[in-house]
Length: 372
Image (tube, rainbow, N blue to C red; front, top):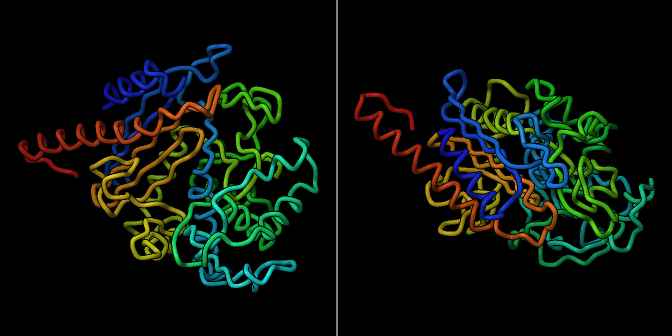
């Protein structure tokens, strides 16, 4: 498997899908889990520093699932919050009438009515400032709803920016502290999945974009402009991670999905959270599921799979039935976000991986040993 992973990411590099990547697979659960990992290419094309297992990738929107959603699951399981709590109940300030009955469930499943995106950052100077959060939240809340809540799903950063702020208000701690305390720390991943990077960590970060708004090539600072305005820590983006860190957290999700009463505090809510929320829509609470015939996970992940994509070229998919985790971390936006070759590469990559796993499984069955 490691040979195939290496071949696939080297193919992606040769086809200029991304400058560098790390990929990993896990099969099985608990102590029976087997893992494979491969890396190739450059962290930064300027100095040609190589991607290693220790490379920190900007995980972008994987932050939504692996940090914000799991933190919500933790507080749901602990009884501090309920998925149907509304902004009217939780928001610390004044709300426009059309936002008051939006629930955490609707925010987590991208069915809140909030717009898909708007470049609010262009209205603010690229300067760190304590007023940035208030300015951004004010714009998000004042923007009219794009559709009636619960009528459809429309992927939106803004719901997760609101969720991140609510979690900080609830706990009195920023998301980075909450994530380290409740998610990464208990799994021994506090140095593998991080928000605030130490100066010494920057040399092992994968570079992202030559950002015209900030006027520099980004390395060791968050790519997402709105998250940067919020100090690099937000509900929708900001998390950096190694391939091992993401794989291990996804493995813990798979384990908790099978045994919700064991292990992590947030696992108890997984059976409720990992269900599609609206008819003919793919979103669970914080996680997506495969879209039939059009999924980035390809053709072989079962309907009982969850995953998420990150704009910088990151992704994970977890199949409960086959007990398979596949993680792909790349810096496809380096040096420009205009490179969209990752879109067809993702399903191609996942199909190649799953076909190999299924072939190996058939061979094991013939030999009297089976897993998938």
